[in-house]
Image (cartoon, rainbow, N blue to C red; front, side, top):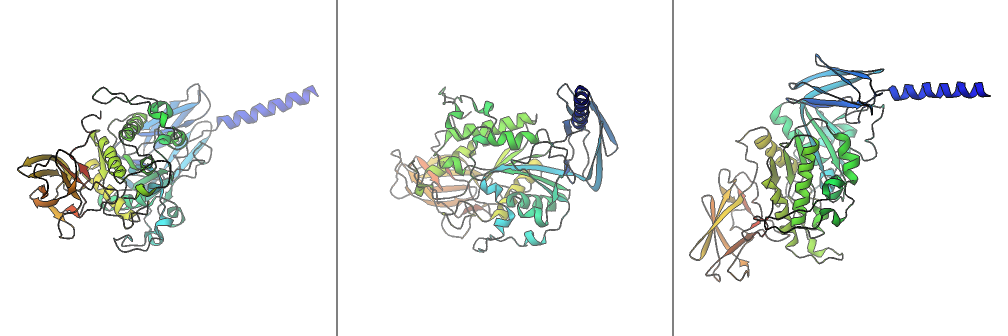
Length: 485
């Protein structure tokens, strides 16, 4: 009996040692992946402690020795873009060969349902009122093997010996992928002519807190006037829940930047400056995770919707959404951030999910082309409020991002401008374009102090630049701009 037990234990330890010796890779590393060009590329995994690991790709050979916990990491030298499928060989006590790898541009898109909104859902939208249908039925006709996609699933990201990898953006894999992410990639490919890789990590209904590492959210934000906000995590919302299961497993995969489309769930909470600080924390902590303080972070300002009619314990007004828009825009004070405005892409303000995902993806691509890829001739934003000047009984508003000129989309008088005197009693205003300025006035306001534009949850103004991009909602009496830091 004793001899049999010893034989069993011996066999057990041989088997378990053999299993532990296997190199294990994170799920994001696999067949068909796209590696980021022009940057050092991280390749990592686990194996037996003290084991020598060799990674070979594109005539490069990198080696590492696992630490006491079995972790290893190497960096490939920067690669040039390539459509040539190549193999990566990873050797330790066993060998893994990853096939059909391209080199190009890689982006991570994240957020809640509007970012998760899959191509299969998008295909059901049949309204043509505002161009909801793209010119091509991509769900059924997409056939570009140089656009690759990886769908980050919460219950899928644990490392394992399996290396199923990425998919080409066509056929069955495309059905469940983010429509915004796909159309962003499609436009980027058309302009850059390099392979594009998209990673989608989004969860419907999610607040921002689950996307932030819990320990990073335990902060007390301070306004410039010295006022201290309560700890942000006191708002609940399962801090770290999706960060731990969906974002952390991606670190340190090398990519170009982040795309973010989230906020509706926090807007339902009537959040303003608190959301801005949470958003700032998310951006800065993710950049810290990837050890790059300059990683581009581009986001979508949420769409018009009738939050005031929500049936919950809170009282919502028609101004809660504009205040939330304002809080989203505050993070533009951080470097390498940009915002896409979509007030014109909503057909029904009773629909929380605007159908025009292809245009949202397109606008994100315009931002990336202008800012991440240096194509300064690409106009990527509508008019943005800069400053005001009172002249007699009018207010002169100056804008940036005027493109080739300010305009009215329907050639009618500019809509959704209001003006007020010192009493802050706002009334509808007359707004006239003069060069890169708008002159605002109202007959009943002889001494104007303030102007607001698009300051209503259903506001869909006709005010654009000549490139067709909508003006960003604003109020000249923004209470947070000088306090946020």
